[in-house]
Length: 196
Length: 196
DNA sequence: GTCTATAGCCCGATAGAC
DNA sequence: GTCTATCGGGCTATAGAC
Image (tube, rainbow over all chains, first blue to last red):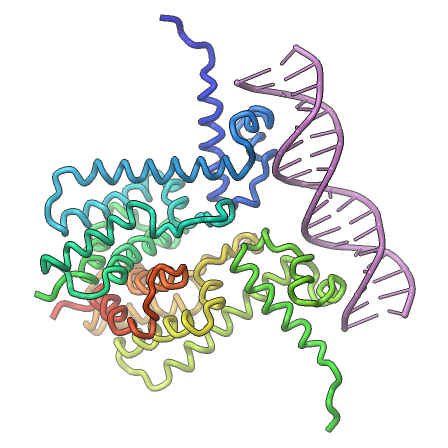
């Protein structure tokens, strides 16, 4: 079996990683192609050979990121049955990602997708967030959760998580989310569960 | 008393209003001076006469917006005594603003301040959010709130509000926040209050 | 497929008349 | 104080060699 000299995919993967990090750090319009070229070590020509333009690159990164997150969620849900278990698995996942792959989480939470997607769907319509809404609806139906508007309860649950992650990633919260996860998940659950 | 012909302040106020709306809608770097000129009807020269550069304009808007919000909070807190009353007043304020002055709320929640302020303080350090943290600490001390990390509880309370506002302002939540305020504030309170 | 060089555009900021 | 006209610079995207 011949060893391939240099996989072209390596270059493009490097571009994608670097560009996603830079987009998150500086915002789409503060990241120039020359900067991506300098940071990734891949030339302008190579980038434009793979992507029609800067928007296409950003859109590709967007889809790839959502897909990765969704795959992780699906694998975490294996074996969960109650609404509590499912939502806890979701919460644990986002807290884990925030600590271990902060760029992915920052992209999901803070990226202004409308800067490169004119017909942009709000992120609340992306699969994982629709899943939270459906799970919340299920919890209301079976009495585990307080009755009410499913959008509001879903937003309450995710809002706690995202805001805690936000203060952690901005450096305000000194403790790691792993250490605080029990307390965070308790707060999120109290916000939506049915009264005893 | 003479009537002034044209108050120069009018022009500059129009620039500030227009620029804040455009910054919120499109982001700092997607708003060009020519666009502000066209939208506000005030010329390039007039803008640069009042502001050293585009960053200065954005910083002025930033300070003005935070100041306005803080003033509103202070006036809403008059007469409140318990931690519940105080936090409810805060919640009611942000929900009211989100419905009545969405640009102000969008600015507070979604603006990337680091695009025009290099030494930018995270917004969680701004006066109103520090106030929430202090109030939460007060509630823990007197037993109204569940014991725990004050940053986490404060983030839980504000996170519910901001996420609900986010889905409302993005058009996903059809019901007005005024109609949902009781349910929203209940969720936020349940997240942090002491067990009965 | 990948590179360098550069065309063409729009921006922020300035100059100078009024 | 306000205007129009314009300069210099950095950007996206392309051209053409290898």
